[in-house]
Length: 119
Image (cartoon, rainbow, N blue to C red):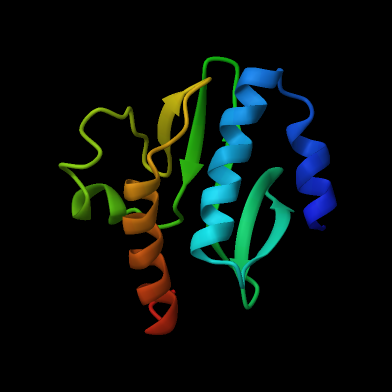
């Protein structure tokens, strides 16, 4: 699976939703440029050394990011108050971009965990 497959995957969304997802993709790429982009579990996913760091995708009524770390919710509780959450995902508006500042915090936690081999 490759970056081209991620691009193809995102073409199934209408333009406003695709633009929001592409912006999230761009933010992640800026924060972790060394990560590979793949389709994993049928979702665009950024991986380092074969391990999923974060995934994102669009759905009928919202977009979601999947941080692959259930402790993110408790660690960033105040930052995530306005977002609906499930055990493994954080939802945001279908045509809205997830805030880059919060994405940076999530990725810092994930990269720290990967570096310490907690994952």
